[in-house]
Amino acid sequence: MSEEKKHDGLSRRSFLKGVGGGVVGTAVLTSSRRTSAAEQYGDVVGPDAVEITLNVNGQKRTLTVDPRVTLLDALRDQLSLTGSKRVCNKGQCGACTLICNGRTVLACSMLAIDADGADVETIEGLKTGDQLHPVQEEFIKNDALQCGFCTPGFIMSSVALLRKNPSPSMEEIKYAVSGNLCRCGTYPHVFKAVHDAAQAMKKGG
Amino acid sequence: MKPFQYVYPKDIKAVPKILAEAGQTALLYAGGTDALARMKEGVSQPDVVVNLKEISGFSLIRSDKKGLSIGAGTLLADVVESEEAQDYPGLVEAVKAVGTIQLRNMGTIGGNLCQRPRCWYYRSARFDCLRKGGETCFAIYGDNKYHCIIGGNPCFIVHPSDVAPMLIALDATIEILGLKGSRWVKAEEFYVTPQQDPYNETILKSDEVVTSVHIPAQAKSLKSHYVKFRERDSFDFAMVSVAIVASISDNTLSNVRIAYGGVAPKPWRATRAEKALEGTNATEQQILDAATGEFAQAEPLEQNEYKVIMAKNLLKRAIRELRQG
Ligand code: SF4
Ligand code: FES
Ligand code: FES
Image (cartoon, rainbow over all chains, first blue to last red):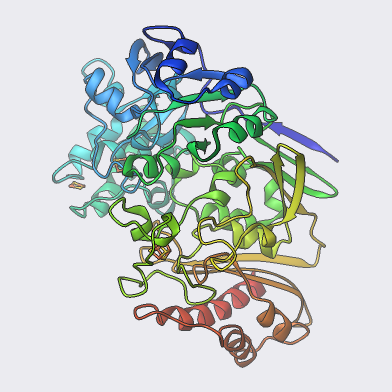
């Protein structure tokens, strides 16, 4: 029996526009060598800034980014969404964890242009009105943070877990946040907070 | 970071053409988790970054009676979660051992196979080491705790992939596309030692791209298992890892295939150990003897002799768990 499964890429490009001059012109201007193969066999953007659209916490946001800019820096520096933290900036700590198209990713290790057209959820989008998300509530109640730098990342990993698995075991909770580091060593409180959030969310219906 | 052009190839066939023209100035970019880190550090300074992520057909998992095919652009997370892959437990274990949940949601199979070494001298733009075209290997007299114990010289990296040793143990083949068309190579032959080529870890030529991986269907009696020892258990690169495939009947091991991660500049097929264990009951002593034979040629550096001991013990653990599993 043969079964075929296709997985969608991380993002579907809505449109990518070179800003300030046509794409071809850009290539000729900034590169000493001709890049005709790239243009002939593909679409080319950069090195000039590119216009992208992100669906951030349910809101369409259009911004202009240098292709070198990470999703994390675009959110923090251009959209003033500083909840996602920039700690190691090289994919080794989890502080920049956010949810992109339903999956947790490291925003520091991803180009903003690769998120064009994507649904991006950050810690800022978790609350409903003035009501914090149950995971946030339980982090506070359980004293699951000290300096707080790792906290948004831990919370995003935990929220992603509870969406998939509303009643995780302690092992599953530990595994779900195993890609997040906490220098202050709040781990036991984090595990308890996620456990309590699961209970609270079940009660809350 | 140096400015670059970002190219979205029309289809996979366009990639070799783009690479052939851009040459050394091009960089293949899929999940980007490794490539972007190198670009930030200035270790890789491409003018042209080729985005492979959105090429259709590049991400797919398919199984039939011949085996399992995985497109190179398939996310590691998709492999872990796919129904098709569950017939290859060792593969799922190895893929799950890579990075973190977040990194597996971003990284691809092809990227994992083609990731560059973790040697800290290599990763730092301040060290113009041999692998980057300089004259010196700084690891020889420097900090070499995580470097190789066998097959090194003139460069002493270890290959960081968890997936590659398992693919070798499963006798997988890798599909490569270049200007002249497609070719298939055994996973084992995909990697090179620094003697063969000190600048590259694989046989990929500058116009080539990995397009898929194929794992032959395993006989029912075959079991597979991946064991990874890391300094920090939540996530880390392997200090030493063992991928093993074998069938066990009446306590006797046969069709044994073993590949190590973390010990050599390429995933290390342990043919001597395989031969020593084939047809035996693999008692603790026999395993120890087999691993001792395998690493008789080991030449540990100043800080990594522990890896020789670890490599022996990890083989014991791998076989014990293979039996139980
Ligand atoms: S081990 Fe290889 S990569 Fe590391 S410093 Fe030596 S030559 Fe460079
Ligand atoms: S800031 Fe992204 S992983 Fe550390
Ligand atoms: S609370 Fe300080 S790093 Fe986690």
